[in-house]
Amino acid sequence: MALDGKAIKLADLDELDALIGSAQLRVGEKLVCRRQRPDAALYVGTGKAEEIKALVEQHALDLVVFDDPISPIQQRNLTRLIGVPVLDRVELILDIFAQRARSNEGKLQVELARIEHQITRLVRSWSHLERQRGGFGQRGGPGEKQIELDRRMLDVKAKQLKLRLGKLEKQRNTRRRARGRNPIPLIALVGYTNAGKSSLFNALTHAHTYAADQLFATLDTLSRQLYLGPKEQVVISDTVGFVRNLPHSLVQAFKATLEETAQADLLVHVVDVANPAFREQIAEVQKVLNTIGAGEVPQLIVFNKIDLLSNGAGRAPDEPLISHDEASSTDPMDAPPCDRLPRFWVSAHSGAGLVELRQFLRQFAGQYALNTSRHDADAQHPDALRPSFVLPPSEKVQHDAFVA
Image 1 (spheres, rainbow, N blue to C red):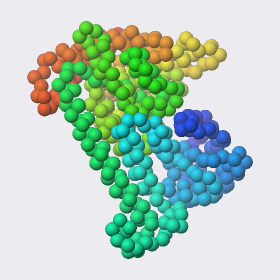
Image 2 (cartoon, rainbow, N blue to C red; image 1 turned 90 degrees about the horizontal axis):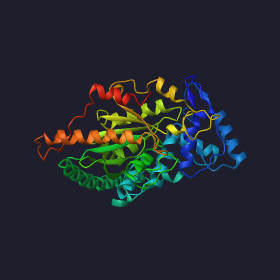
Image 3 (tube, rainbow, N blue to C red; image 1 turned 30 degrees about the vertical axis):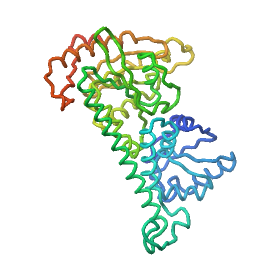
C-alpha cells in the first residue's frame, strides 16, 4: 500500500512475490491501493478490506500477505474480517528463515527472533486470553490472566535462548582470537539476497554449496580457504543476504553472526547488476552494514550477472533488461567512502571477469601478509593484526577500467 499520495503498481510487489515463492507458497491474486495514512483498525480501510475478503472467497485463498508491517491490532481485525490468517512481510521473512536454518546456532537465532516477534503479537485474539487463573509459581499468581502467563512463558524461553547463544558467541570469539594470530585475511561476501553470492563463492572456491535463484537460499555462514598463489591465501565466507525492511528482531537475533562481517578484513559486495533496482539494493545493503558496525570495513564492489545484461552473452536481443552502458553511466556508489572503491564486472555463471577478480584478491592477500609481518602485534589484541589496505591511485584507475 502506498501512503501520502505516492504511486504504486503491481510490479512493486515482485519482491514480495519472490519471498512468497521462497516460502513454498503460491500467489493467487495481487492487489495494490493508495491511502493518505493507514487505517488504525484495518490498515487498508473497511472498503479495501471487504474487497480483499471477496477475492479470498472468490479464489478460495488460504492466506493473505501484506508487503508492509502491520500492527497486532490490525492483524487481529483483518484476520477476523477476512476469515483466513493474515501475515505481514516481517512474519513471512521469519518463516523463510525458519525453513532454511540448518546449523544449531542458526536455528536458535531464528527461534529467538520468532519468539521476540510473537511477544509483540499477544493481543486479545482469543477469548481464553481474558480468563483469570489462580494458583502459584509456574501456574501464575492469583488473578493472573492467560495473556500475561503466555507472555511470561515466552520471556523465559527467550532468556534461555539468549544464554545458549551467549555460549556459542564465546566459542566464536575464541576462534576469532586464534584466527587473529594467523596472517590470513578474512574476506566476507555480502550483498542483497539473490545477488549471486553463493554462486560466486562456488566459482571462486570450487565448492558445491547450495545455490538457487531464490531469496535467502543461503542462511548459515560458510567459510572456505582460497589458495591464490604459493604464498597468497585467504579465508572467504558466504554470508546471509540482506533484504529491504529486514525485521529488526531478526537483525538483533543474528547480530552475533552478522558481527563476523564487521570483523572481516575485506567485504566483497556482490550486486545483481541485471536487476533494475540494483541501486536501491546497494543502498539497503549499506544501511544494514552500518547498523552492524561494518560500514567502515574496506569494500570491493562486484557487479555480478553481466551475462544477463541486454548486451551480455546468453540473453536474447529482444529481452532487454539493462544495458552495460546504462549500468555504468550512473554510479550507484557515489557516496563516500563507496566512491573510492574498486569495481569488477563478473559472471559467476559464465566465469567472465573472475580471472581479474582473483588477481586483485591475490594482490590483497600479498599486501596483507606483508603488512602483518611488520606488526609486532600482541596476541591478546587480534584487531591489531588488521592492517589497512589502500589501493594506490594508479591501481584504482586500472581497476576502474573494468567498469567501462
